[in-house]
Length: 398
Image (cartoon, rainbow, N blue to C red; front, side, top):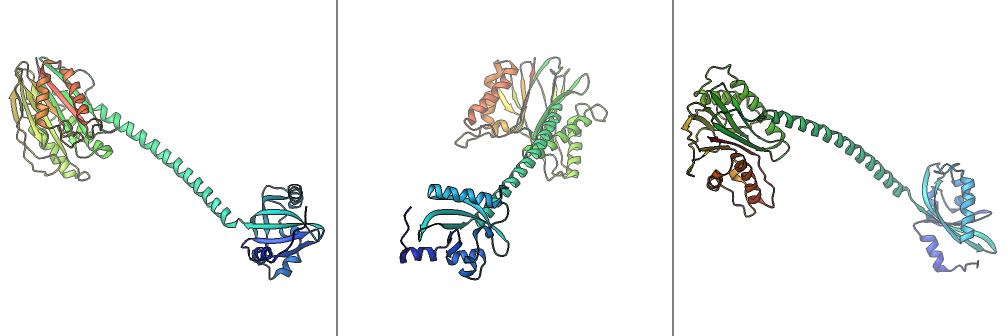
């Protein structure tokens, strides 16, 4: 190694650096800059040069090794390589410990081996690292908590979906002289739609499609509540079961939900009763899309539909509609998802197009017609998925 030549230029760099610079040999610290004085919390350079570097280290380093042993290894590596960079824990005159990045440069000064040492204070960097580690732990804990919440929500949604599914028809509907098919497809795990077809007694067949405003869990909860309420009104234990039943049922339903004011939500409903002997169908619509009738000849019309949605006004009036189904007639009860779905240019599918589609499907088996209407809507909205719940009851007179 060659002895460096001191110059004014290098002296300025040494003295004015923002990092601590000092020189030490076997006698101790022989020189330092003002940054060293400030970093160690000393009064002046003489106080620093009175110290030996070993006095500025705690007994142990952060890895658990003795500072004296590790310092000897670091010095040996610096002499062997010419310079060596490593992290170190130092101690101020006050006793406060602080981390630095040490760069030890092996030199010869006045014929004697020495080190020119640079300390780069890592206090702020280590603080940020600790903050990041703490934030990382907090984020991990939050993610873990969110995962647990999501798991509980998923379990709750699955339970709710099972409850909702329990209100759907589960077996082929026993309706002599008629064929009944249905389609139910919520847009999310839970839907605001609900439907059911059920026997009121040996002669009468009841059915409904309801559609709660909104989607998701809140809408599904209301639809399930309404479904249970309808079941309680149509189980044969209430007065009014018969062809007069639709108005009685819907009025009771509306009074209950108008008084309850469940989260300011309301729902539309079409409820009908079919007399299997006379083939008369009497229905009530509460703000719901009108059922579509397709005759065996292909004539199509939307049935008269009046009445406000359920849950808005307690004393709302509902007027029944009635028709008699002939052999080959098909009747469709459905939710608004079947005609409000839009394609990319914003055009809705619309009721006239739906009427035409049902007429075109009259030669197909009823179950196939119900399946194809869903595919028709998927093609209409492609590539966007269907956004609304889909509920459909299809009835055919044989």
